[in-house]
Length: 263
Ligand SMILES: Nc1nc2c(ncn2[C@@H]2O[C@H](COP(=O)(O)OP(=O)(O)OP(=O)(O)O)[C@@H](O)[C@H]2O)c(=O)[nH]1
Ligand SMILES: [Mg+2]
Image 1 (cartoon, helix red, strand yellow):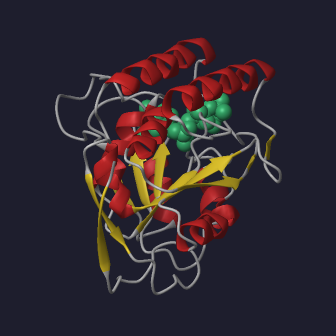
Image 2 (cartoon, rainbow, N blue to C red):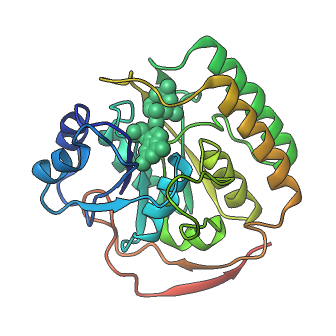
Image 3 (cartoon, rainbow, N blue to C red):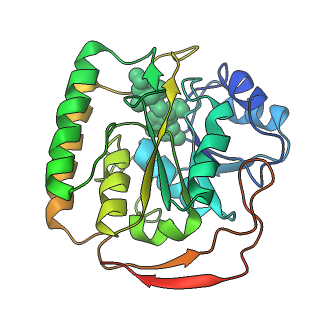
């Protein structure tokens, strides 16, 4: 479970209280919060794994968190209270049923949002249609950060958690991360299932997302990902989904592995 945090100390108690009981690991990736986020995380959950991101932005945080994953299933969960951890079993069920990537959607039956503005919903819909036209996908919610996938998908994401220092923000380090993930998963030929999800309002604090600046980064990401080869040439080792995870997150070791060369 990978949770990016930037000044989410007041929200973490709400989020952690709803986490399933038998998680393999909870990785909090902090972006140099100044409100005691790390201390709160540790006090709520002594077994939490704290990762400090090496650059700036949510995308860089996710890359650093993914690099620290040791489990078989990765769940991406925001820390502001908008993503409900009680939905995790639905994501895991989609993975166990055969998906490589369980993509949350606010725009399918059973999903919704109390948080998205009309402008953002319009922009997301437009970007989503563009993505589907460019990548042959059938996504309904391109810019949503609540997703889960088998760890065998990680190589296809081709994210870079190394490199230059603290104050840099490189391409891929920002809110374009979900678009990079969604398009690379599609290019790798991985099996995608959408999972209806309800996005709640952020509980405390302010959004770090800027609608127009980050919308343009997503648009640019679609263009860049259409022409680059990332995701496309990665050999994915797809693990058989057995045995079933007992409650939610990280499945027991798999007995068999199937080599699947992606398109
Ligand atoms: N580590 C880290 N986490 C970040 C950074 N920016 C945002 N986050 C976290 O990423 C999650 C999503 O960020 P939000 O600011 O809520 O952005 P959003 O959910 O896309 O936008 P809203 O719908 O307006 O809330 C939250 O848990 C943030 O704390 C960052 O630069 N570093
Ligand atoms: Mg948010």
